[in-house]
Amino acid sequence: MARSMIWFRKGLRLHDNGAVIAAMNGSSSVVPVFILDRWHCNPDNMGNIRFEFLMQSLRDLDCSLKQRGVKHGIIFLQGEPEIILPKAWKAFSIDVLAFDDEDENEAHVRATDTLIKKYAAIAGVRIILQHSHWLHSPAEYASKLAGTVPTTMTQFRKLLDQVGQVPEPREAPASIPDGDSKYEDALVAFGCPSFSIPDDDSFYSSLGRVRAVPKFPGGETNGLKRLEMQIFQRAKWAAGFEKPKTSPNSIEPDTTVLSPYITHGCLSVRQVWWAIRQVQCQANVSSKPPVSLDGQLMFRELWFIVGRLSGEDVSDMEGNSLCRNIPWGRDDKARDRLSKWANSETGFPFIDAIMAQLRTEGWIHHLARHAVACFATRGDLWCDWRDAARYFDRWLIDADWTLNHCNWQWLSCSAFFYQYFRCYSPIAFGKKTDPNGDYIRKYVPVLALIPAKYIYEPWKAPREVQVKAGCVVGEHYPHRMIEDHLATSKANMNKIKAAYDAHNQVENERRQKKKARIS
DNA sequence: TGCAAGTTGTAGAT
DNA sequence: ATCTACAACTTGCA
Image (cartoon, rainbow, N blue to C red; front, side):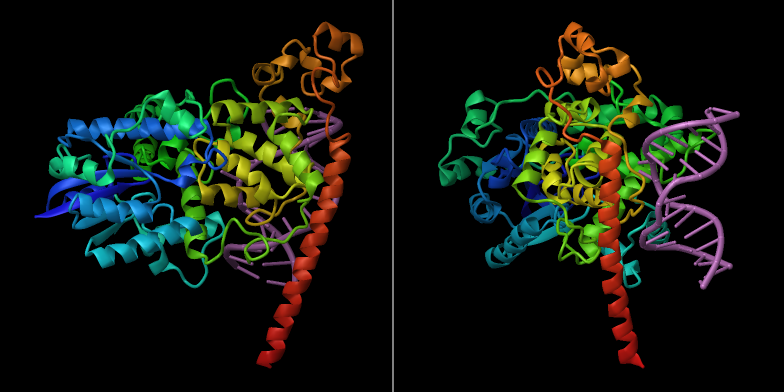
């Protein structure tokens, strides 16, 4: 009987986990492994909140594995997978390695996985690659693609129809064959006292981190609980969900906040899909994609397809044929503007509040992401979306490399969405759903006592009002970075138009040359 | 080729 | 709450 290793990366769950099922199939023992690599450790890549969400998810998984008979739980290792894994195969006498290819959209993960596959072949370890992170596997989409990948929801939905019904989620195994017989030997081989998940402050400080307390705690158990609360316990609401009608600046989230659980694989996306289907079928009226809850999952799937199957690097502009070249600012001045944006120093309370919520809680509403992304790029600051995207990638607990980059391209009118004359106002947009500015008062406390009339534009408050509120603009709260949002956004629209014109000219010339060649 | 549609704008009118 | 003008992008479909 084979000895299998499950390499956990993002599928941090036991329900509907292809790698777990594959590893158990015909195996006498299963060794679950997680590797904390250099990328995870760098706080510039992953903020403290997402890091703790990850650690909580690992602890929950560890607990579930132990409950199901894996005596030592997850084997927690630190280092680079291409070095650590071959060592672990030897130490645990592994025959089969099962893992999910969830992150292979990203070049550095693809490079690592390629190495692992090569080393496994050398070591005589059989690889079982699974796809449980998408609704359907990349290969299934690829087999139905007629030439180009979908870049619009209409195109995607046609493809989804062709691929067929989303597979139903599989249950978590009741018990898992233990693979600990080599545990003590492996400890010796690795020269470490324990493979258990570190839970002490010295671990965090050794990484230059402090332990955060996520508002939305990680783990499969919490994910399933949240699914129950957000979908089944409010079935009518979930069935009628319309994203544009939800509020970006309510104090408690106005959407499900299932995304961090789906991102880390604490929840299977298929489990969520079928939960939504169930409440939609039971409801008398339900909303339809793209605004509905299943529509949100469709967008996720669409961006994954673009990221994996288009052949383009979604984090790139110049070399990415799907992305318009727009001469964004990337000089020192632009980076300074971006740094003010990131640190809630724009002087626009709505924008500063959103960025404060992002830094302190790691989650902001999708429309709040729109507002700050538009402000940072085409709306006001004219900063490069690639530079801005890094802040989201670092601080969001649901950060996903592919989705993040595609959404930044959307918001900056670089790809997928082109109505650049539709521009979010940093003043008016938030007023619709929070006229009193409670959200601003919470996340930018220095503005707490500013009267509602001026809360979105404190510079308009008479000086005595500012003094009375204990918040004088320029003293306690920064002057606005952009004197005139309307004029700035109009000027930016002209810049985008110029970039589009240049793009179309090049495209037309290319087409004419092609035509000339044919005739 | 032309017209409608596209997840989620704003400002001002009714 | 629902209308319109704003100025006018790309994609989809007939």
